[in-house]
Length: 232
Image 1: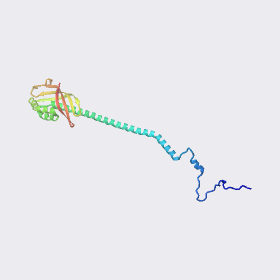
Image 2 (image 1 turned 90 degrees about the vertical axis):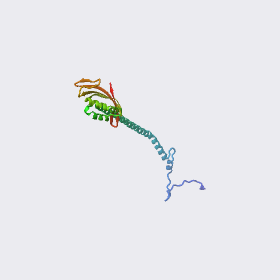
Image 3 (image 1 turned 60 degrees about the vertical axis):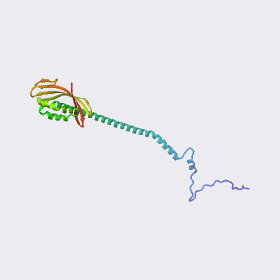
Image 4 (image 1 turned 90 degrees about the horizontal axis):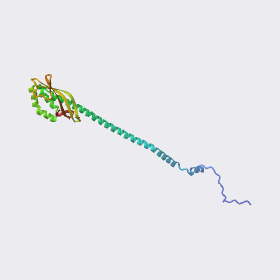
């Protein structure tokens, strides 16, 4: 007798085409390939690559920042150096100008002080007082009457010539100038009654060398003599 068929026998169903509206099943091979051991998802792999790239670029960025900082420091140092040089040059130029102005003022006062004539001594002394200040102005004011009488009584004329002049000390506000000059004395009515000891007679007049020290003070842009003293 032929064996009876059993319902327990496993049979492999035949594959069939999906009907209309039924979803298409993804191939098993594709699913297996997506989950192969040792391969991770695509997104984590991209993040790791980006992190590695960032770490590789960090030294370059640090170098660029360092170079920028160094450039800024060098620029600031150069600017500071230029400012210091400018200040030094301005100060040096100011000192030279002050010295020249003080020397010029001292030379003029030395001439005005020792070049007088009887006919105009009063007007000359008025002008001289405008060039003086402090102790020098006080001294001339106190001796003015005696000086005027001496020139007018003897009809005296004095004319000075500067031989040399130089600054002993010079600042922006004060200066000391030494002036060496020769002063010629001439008297209309005879010899000078009381000539200086250093005078030398010749050509009908006395030539008297002398040196004077002038201390000057600056007032605004004007230099005035504040003290006058003879130098041996």
